[in-house]
Length: 309
Length: 253
Image (cartoon, rainbow over the protein chains, first blue to last red):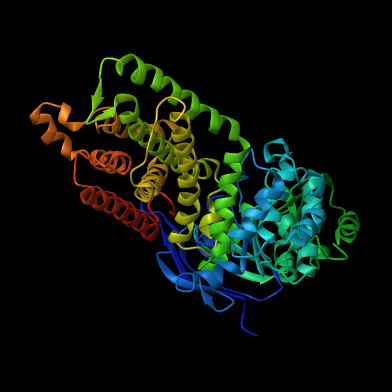
């Protein structure tokens, strides 16, 4: 089956000369959840805005369900729903009216039963006659989701759906995304939280400075990114890793004052207990222990380094 | 043609109007009454008649035009500026609509509101003066075209404006003087000869003249010219909006 979303060498250079997208190529299969991971300013929002019609591309092409986003914009846009990053709602309008407006805008006949279903699903039905300005931040975001879903799109873009949302709501959002996936909607979400991508996505794309560095199955990527370092401060410096410890992935650091053990935090056995026992057996005295997980920034540096190599 | 989208925008905009229907109704009634008290009674008592029409009746078409033009401009400009200001305009940009559908929805609603005000003022006027309408069909046509063309103009202002101050700038600084100097409250024949010539560069002259002709059968400029002017203005505004949507100026980055 052809991918539902095909992006070919998509480019966007803003009027000021800033290159926000430097030729992004990506296929997304129907029904999958893809998380686009990247720091602020990486081009995540520009990519989504371009696909949705808010920003005009300066090169390349993209199609949704086989419909070109520019030449065949009506058919393409009918299939797309967008939940923008910034909460934007008309303050004085009732929830139900703003949801109905969106359905009409997308060329669909008024359907009160569907609107009710969606509002109930998002726990907004009781608030249907409330002006949007009286809603909490989490509710406003759910109204935006309701608006994005009310024309029954097959592709849903969620631009940082949990930015500024508390922990409980974040979990709720993840559940909502699961439900949407179960109903067959393809979801592309952006985030700069590794944890969030991990919780929701099937595949993860890493984007930085307008370039898609890689797209991988989540499991494979998490394995790559899930490595941690255990640093063991030594009582007395060593000149080399003792032979008894050669079975471990160890490096000497800080002029022999520390041993660094790299391990997979996702693995069933991290090997830490064995290592500590082996250190004791070898008579190596420990002064202190610390562990460190690569931050997203470090991971990006790693990825860029690998790609350059 | 995405008719559902046109209907959705139109209904949404009209809902805003109906939320404040009392204000929408009362303010033109009060302002028209004030105009009649000041212009019609105080000044009108010193002017016997203009071109055979009592001064009170003479200013009715001008008063209606004044209100319709202002309402059309402000309603349309606000209707498009507000969603840009709150950020909700993204959904129009992402919707499967072309510019004519967007314009039909917003401008249709703005023109409807303006027409409503026009009719209210006409009704209020009958409380103060006797009015007979010589060409009712032409009157409705002029009212409609004026409402639509100035709603289109307002739509452009609403896209151009970057702040609420700018939103008011053109209606206050340019359009308002043009209306007052366009013969709303006087006949061009009352002006010195040189001003009669200069005033012909004011497009509003043609609107008010044509509209007044539909009431009293007399006009400052030929009625055909009035019709041509208003159609030309409408076409120009539509052309500009078409260009805005094609290039994405101030709408799409």
